[in-house]
Image (tube, rainbow, N blue to C red):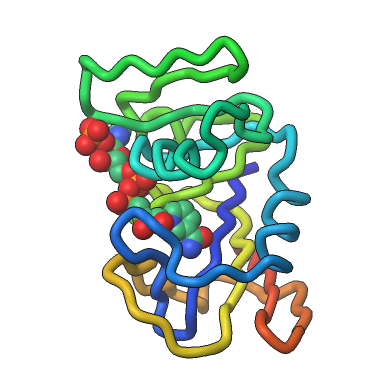
Length: 160
Ligand SMILES: NC(=O)c1ccc[n+]([C@@H]2O[C@H](COP(=O)([O-])OP(=O)(O)OC[C@H]3O[C@@H](n4cnc5c(N)ncnc54)[C@H](OP(=O)(O)O)[C@@H]3O)[C@@H](O)[C@H]2O)c1
């Protein structure tokens, strides 16, 4: 089961340089509850961005797969269960267990064709940035859940 989880505004904006353009605590809590202890996949840029928040603390996931094309990249942290993925498409195509794809823009784009479930938090409001989620063909999915708060519309789309 390939799950993707992200937050975007209603124009598909997800990032500004290496940061998320908003700081919405309830969405961070939602994201953390969904991914805590889980097997996740992310690009190296997103991993390093998260590490700048967590600093010396381990990220709150189970196993962390980090995608890169840099064969010289070494990420070792005795507090985290990390594995580097060079051939992302082969990896995601053949992954049989549950995994949560956690970004960023490049990794979402490459993994979207293989995703079974899309957990999208639509952020209300106007923000600026330079990283976008690719166009989604919503006709491929059923919206199976939606919950609205003042700041966020939480949704789940499942592949038909
Ligand atoms: N709103 C959200 O929910 C959310 C969530 C996560 C991230 N973000 C945002 O997304 C942005 C980061 O996105 P990004 O696109 O710059 O970085 P990214 O997706 O985290 O990582 C991109 C890296 O993946 C590696 N890569 C590319 N193609 C690959 C392939 N075929 N196989 C294996 N590895 C491959 C490359 O690493 P090398 O160049 O090192 O080889 C590339 O630099 C930030 O603004 C961040 O805040 C937003």
